[in-house]
Image (cartoon, rainbow, N blue to C red; front, side):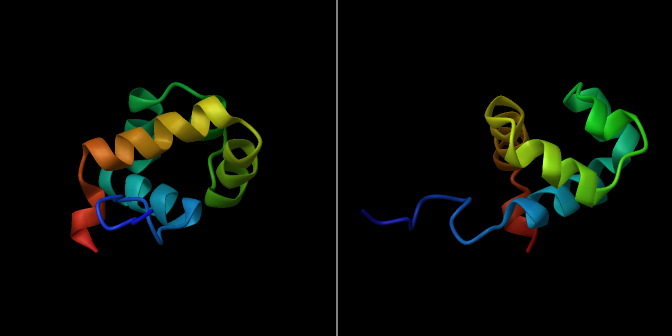
Length: 74
């Protein structure tokens, strides 16, 4: 199965979080996705730890990344 049309292909979760923070900032990202790892003492490391073990939150982050077309800014 080809991944040509998959905007997440070859993009790590860390790259996604960094791109979203660069685009929205932590407060803006917390408004977009209401989860504590973006609101309370946020960091890329703590967010990755939470997102890796919380599939629904990871899905929201990936959907926001694709919806905002941040993959086109690389």
